[in-house]
Amino acid sequence: MIDLTAPTGHEPALRALPRADGTPPRALVLGATGYVGGRLTPRLVAAGYRVRVLVRDAARARSLPWGDEVEIVEGSAAEASAVARACDDVDVLFYLVHSMGAGRGFERADELAAQTVGKAAATAGVRRLVYLGGLHPADAELSPHLRSRVAVGEILLNSGVPTLVLQAGVVIGSGSASFEMIRHLTEVLPYMPAPRWVRNRIQPIAIRDVLHYLLGAARAPSGISRAIDIGGPDVLRYGQMMNGYAIEAGLRQRAIAALPVLTPTLASHWVNLVTPVPRAIARPLIASLQNECIVKDGVPDDLIPPPAGGLTPYREAVRLALGRLDEDRVETSWQDAEVSGAPSDPLPSDPEWAGRTVFTDERERCTRASAEDVWEIVLGIGGENGWYSSPVLWAARGWMDRVAGGVGLRRGRRSRSAARVGDAIDFWRVEAIEDGRLLRLRAEMKVPGAAWLELGVEPDGAGARYRQRAVFFPRGLAGRLYWLAVLPFHGFIFAGMAERITAAAEALGDLSAR
Image (cartoon, rainbow, N blue to C red):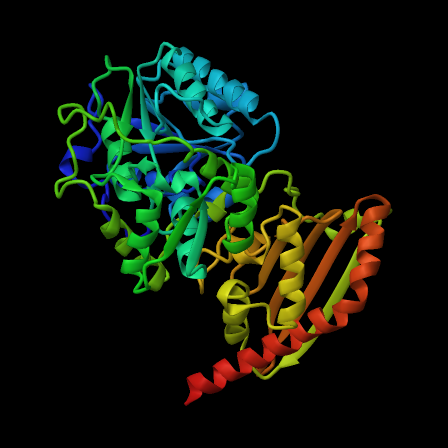
């Protein structure tokens, strides 16, 4: 189990209330591998719940720090049979899934999933549904993203199962998309041309307070079913939030000019270029800021008591988030969300390649460094540590991907030194880890086909043998032409990687020996 920060789940007001027969209640989490769900799940375990999760990829869930402490059901919220299995003998269900980064048709997909879950929960006799929605004004035209959040909440409220819809605004915490957008806009731009919405008032909330309310909602009396706004103690303009970040980060306050010409679409392109947050995620975030979002109907203290020390002020939330980044202890990140449209099938085993078109680039290198030192370098590849070859070429490929609407290289990685299955590393996703032996990355860049990069290590006498393999399954003529176009650069990129990774491992070993 990971070392939990507040709330830990051990707080008396958040502990699980036993069933009438004295047994612990069962909680089902949908979205357990996402930003909020990945933090809520271990706290539910700590609070005394028997926890079950419904996830698309059971292997990814098992690889998480809490993976062996929960029951895992594989499937999606849109699969009626999987949801029915997951809802069996459940007391409280947390609905934390949404399609913010998905393309066209996401509103209908969200509604169908909510209907499927609501029906299954009612049939199974679930005592309580808890849904994390979005804070929004009652009398304004909403963005498609917020409109979908509201529709999902209404479907769950009408399911026949007592439901609490917690409507949160901008969530501030290490790894949250909103925080990363604020952080990078403030750090990169000394002068910020911004849309008019920087003058809108919003009420941000710290991730720890979101988790407090979610845990508290599980204990709410069964007869209460309603939507409730949740927010922190500060009401700020977006520009004030950026400059509040600047103060906490030790930067000069930024000059911000509100321009009438930056539409949500144009602003999302701008954010896509200067922050790690890709356009698919930036656009719904920006669209949700078009109206003032402040708490109107807050949480009654007798329903969910506030945190013992009170709600977290905005600048303290920023301070806590920066501290977690400095310590390299980010629990979850917006990067954890899968990229819509990216290949998700695992790399086929070699015998299955027979009869298929596949291109590979394989490198091998012996080194005097120990296998442990080579593995340490391999496990920390990407992000701030770079790719150990041709940084200009890697940067150019990342820039091309961003322009095409992909995630690019600026997405980085959750941790500088650790990786787990499902983690994002720049425009790759960790598909498999064999500790000390193999790291397999699946490409999520915009590419006409499916691509993987494998980095392997094995002991070899007094040193180690490093193996590297790039695999590409082209899609149609475009995929074949793509491979031919990048082939001349492989000598610079992949040969350089093998050479510099082993050199870095040798330098690491020499440093340790001193």
